[in-house]
Length: 155
Image 1: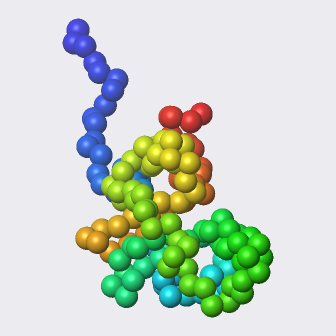
Image 2 (image 1 turned 180 degrees about the vertical axis):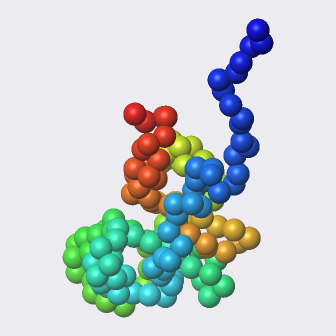
């Protein structure tokens, strides 16, 4: 009597069946971007209108040169009030965070989650060949987790 296998034929996973786990699978590509010569007031209006907490600042070549946030704007409100200086003509160039940490679009989404925890950031820009191509936020990581919820890592 021969031994019968109950495992059956195994198929190789095709790329179409693979679970998307890269940052680039979940990042936002259609970004609201700012220019360094925009006024703080116009940035504040955009942040409020689109219900976002900040965004990338790019030059004319779509190269990332900084990030502007609600906190940066609030700091200017506070300083302009303290020094009794009008704010309407101030541009964001001197008030944005210029030393920006980016994240690789090929990074695993779980590694990105750990990077968010260690860096205490709300968003990371993704740059390819010197150009801004997207942004991943903490909310994007949460969406990825919900999409992957049925997988064996979360039951």
